[in-house]
Length: 57
Image (cartoon, rainbow, N blue to C red):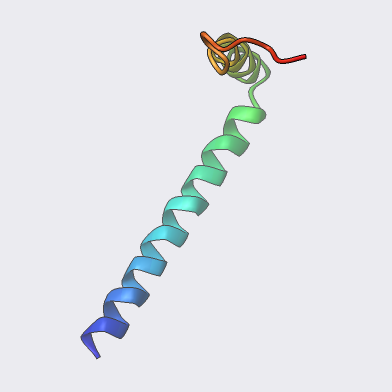
């Protein structure tokens, strides 16, 4: 019984976390300035994906 409760609580915790993350991203996307800043930051981080790796032909 304890294992079932532990799993249910963990699933509920994860569900709540993802719902909150979705609400936060929705709020971010509804703010054009903040969303633009987010996209700019992502672009800055993208250049690190292949840092030090050669492009194969």
